[in-house]
Image (cartoon, rainbow, N blue to C red; front, top):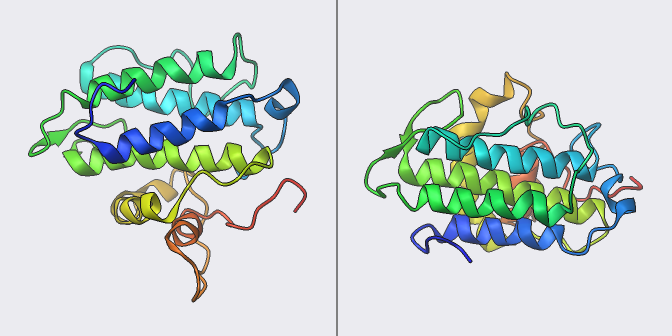
Length: 197
């Protein structure tokens, strides 16, 4: 299903986002998420658009048709029909990236070391998989092993992005927080978030 196994962190993050879209109902698509003022449908549109933005940065084509930061929340097909092609395109684009080189990104940072660029795309997919999962009452799809790989990437790229409103201010981590909770708090998300909180 994936175009590469070179970037296993990306494959695992894509798998989490793919799993998050499985069996979503119309009611699920309208549910609130940890992304303030965005529904599940809007988070999926944003996540898909972000993956396509990486594709466009790397290949020069195939960017998102709509602004990922202004998602409409109206899907023309199923969640899988929205997300799956973007994950395949992202994996294919990153398969062309030399692990020892740099990769262009859609981030204000521009080109980054390849592993950091891949990690940034994986971070986006994995965290939005978590958003969708917790919004729909499913087990969180961000495990400590994946989060431990993504936390250094987040620390390398997030601070300049906060000024653009991409992330809320970091929350203080607890002494007993595992890697997933630490990552979520660093990104301004409450690991205990629920739709009723």
